[in-house]
Length: 292
Length: 338
View 1 (cartoon, rainbow over the protein chains, first blue to last red):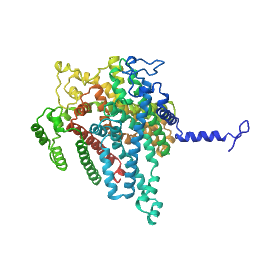
View 2 (view 1 turned 180 degrees about the horizontal axis):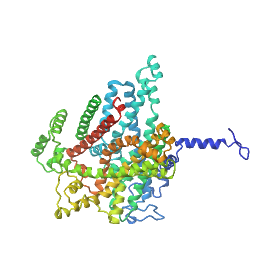
View 3 (view 1 turned 90 degrees about the vertical axis):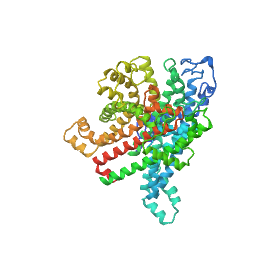
View 4 (view 1 turned 60 degrees about the vertical axis):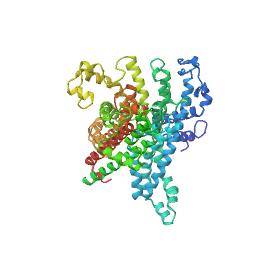
């Protein structure tokens, strides 16, 4: 239906565009808010060196004379214990947090999907062994196992990524296995087998691409959880260390100043909250849309 | 049912065995020599060798794993390097305090989360629903350690409404000493009629319990809402509406009971999660539970203690999972054939 507008131009196009945009976020306003927030955070992280008012303060710069200044026109979020601009550090902190989130989700996603698709296609004892191993890993709450691992490894951003990835992959393995098992019973897989296509090709060319959607949604839902866990590890001193800008670390270093210089702790804390919120709301919207 | 029971139990035993092996492997990776940590930096080579022999560090790994399993089964969870007491006794003392805190938090989460979930489902798509969805999302997105610091600063250090840290006022130990039975202070105080300590414990519980309650309250509200909405779109709900029941009655009198089933299993699962989340909160409020014990152990690279905490929480999780599955198997026969 092409309804003509006042000037004779068809109004279908903007309507279509609106439908597409709403469809993107599962027709849910809250999820759209999440998507916009997340886009802004990603932009802030990418452009941190350009938009941070004091780019050097994201690293090891110190200005002892400007320590603990309250928020003002020159320092919107105030300054920290050694005089660094808190806004600049929060912006750079977005880089650390998103880097950790992406790295963990990629590693855990790849490991989980590969093991899951093999388990789902092979079935039998292969599936049993892989599933029992995931059960063992799932018995440890993520923070607990990461905690134990982070103690064993040296504290660093890499340690945080490894520790969380180790606890995160079983979820994707389990999810992919159940989807892949049902995909493997479909006709085209049987045909491929009858044609003599080797098993690895069937698994990775035919079963894998058809088992991905639920995992991708779950990955987007988990970004918030990864960021919260990473911040908790850094807060405990098991993750990033000075002079890296990391939100959890910033809270830890400023915690004794909360009563007197609230901005040092409040700003990074709110940054974690908003980022995790954006991920959670967006993921929830995507999942609701997939379920429909 | 018996077959389901044995199969499920067998699975749980396998998982616990795996948990023990994984814990052992992680602990073997620990940098630094546990013998040095135990004997101290100034120990003579002879003392070091004695410590190594005592912990069996000279044996091959499979032998070490075997003796580790044998000791665990015999109730010997090793000796803590920093408290110098058996790990099992340390855990026995610290765990009840964590249980008290997480228990209080879960009560709060249920009392707040379920009614909010019902209200959101009742006013689906309207303002109450939106505000409840946003607040429950915020509750699951807030970093607990930060929320703990914020509430402590605001309501304890700032306004002085609640005590800043600890489990109860230590001065009360002299004026009205507590008889310890369960190690859960609030319970002991209640049953021995020790009102001063009971009141003090409750006051100390408020802030940390609220912080820990945030996450479970959020997920419980979300799950209740989702389950209710699904349940109220089923045929039986249409029949009830046709019979003239109002929307609130359909939700609370008919949809709520079946909808609570997934919520109950969720509660059991967030229990173990909350214990670990509680670690961070215990650190902020100096609560004498597993979290503080774990933090002390981590600081002193105390391998046996870290292994003990890890094992205890993982086993709790397996048991909670098993309990949920068995209860659901009893309630819903379809689960058994899965």
